[in-house]
Image: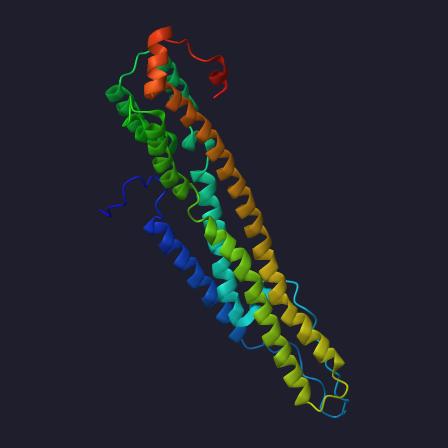
Length: 290
């Protein structure tokens, strides 16, 4: 069994999913090579009569591919890095959407029950810590760090919560850099493909006397621009997902910070002294919305 560092409660990257991604990528590469190397089939039917000499028909310039399979073939070797980048974007977007669910990070039933029992004086340090360990959520891990400083000054309790919160926030932000990197790398790969394609097109024109070849030049440049278009099609969703997930993490961090401050007010030495003077409190009405 692979041992993970303490405090890590994110979803592990399963080996089976890794094998599936690698297999899908291998199939895509094999299909692209087969289609790229397939010889053109001769048209069926009877050959034209040999008695009449017909003038050679001028080849019709081939336009920019529109069919998805033709686009993959036209991308040539650049289909591999672009395809891998798109798979990474889809995989980590789904993984982060699952990990950053509010019900997983801040379970509403646990938070409500925890604070109700704590405000009514039904929990001591051991029972409260056990309740947090049973939950296993990021917010409960943050609470557990503060509970270990039960009865200390508010500064010590708050510092313990900050230390535990930093670890949990780093886990929430995990893999977001991958999406940000994909949104930056994908257009660069597309731009590189465009430059290579334009160099090839101009080289072809130069070796064909360069006269009357405007159709070939236009088709070659249009084909080269496909790589940039595909790169942008990958980068734009990746950037949108990165911004959305970053905003979700920020919202969760703000909410966890507020709940952690409520815990400091309840278990610090100052808070316990205030409860001893006023007696157990009733559950706060404002926390019923949690």
